[in-house]
Length: 514
View (cartoon, rainbow, N blue to C red):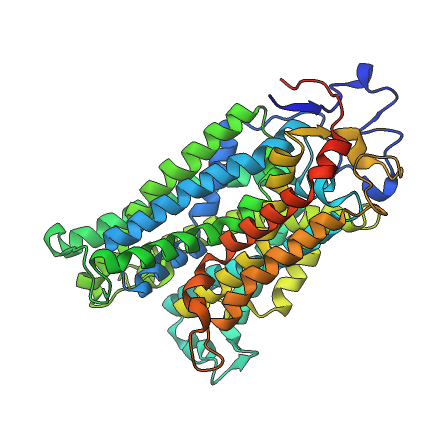
């Protein structure tokens, strides 16, 4: 049974609360912890389809396709890659449901629900970490989609070719034409984000289905060109067969989970809008296992068909579309991929850091300003250097997973194991030393220590996998791909074990939630 003190339903029961637009801001909420974007929602209106569309936008991006395609570089067959993709997404579905519940019931975003475990001030630790990771992902997704602008420009104006060569005309590792495409994507995303969450909801409702049309058209075209008999499940680069492939498949599954670890951790930023937890779970099921299965089949078939059609395995959808002869088909396909990636980048890597950075100083940093901080930071990290080949892709996923995993472990351990699904919403917005989530000067040292421990044990294999001393130390090369899982396990165990006394001290009676 889930027990919480739910957000007040309206003016008659707010006890003097002031309704600030779509949120409920009570008079006794401390301004250092509150603004309209962080306060409990007055109305939660998103249906299962809105959640389904959120995941469609997340899955149907150039980054998702490239990541799925990068699994072929592990030396697996197409069916093994498909198994890894499907099993990985089932795991993501389970964890997304766990993250969704506390925010959906309380109506608050991820950084606010973290106050229950980290303390009302200590919650800035996970907010900043997740915000910085979102900056990296925002840059990566922007770069991947911007490549479509470059390809389209070259298709329409071949004379621009010298400006697409970083050696002839480049800056900080990116060609001038690449910079033009990157900045164009940057501006388009900012314009959509600036219009607010309702416009974003409508945009992602369109993005997910739209890219399916292009994916289907691309798959049908390639299959018709190659013929079913020429599409095999064993590609030229296959290196692992039989039992020897099992550890490689497990590593691929871990990479799939790592790819979704960012939006999965911050999923509360969106589940808070769900009209019910049942609606959120339904949207998750349709948007993750079912949707991703179909997407995975399309990805595998499309990638496999490029081998007989073009004579090489192409795992980048932008490059695949660019091979087509029709300029109209190329333009339509690339523009659709651009739109789809804008959708995922906004929902996963613009909205979330907007909440995270706003949480640090609610009265000075608005939701919009928080998003723009992320956007500016995404340029400074030169993301094209983080995702430019399969080896770098995997290293990036492992590194980011090492820092996201511990935050996930603490959140889940606190809500489900320590507090038994009890949250007092009003206590999340008070600076009173007697508040349930004040701990020690506003910070819970147990949560911070658990996060540090989880990140340490998770990142060490990632750092040592390069064999710095010429040897594979303790099998670190194999352990690195499980960085997210290591971080979750270590942080969760440490937090739960150290919170025995905390559990007894903070168990308080509260009302049942429907």
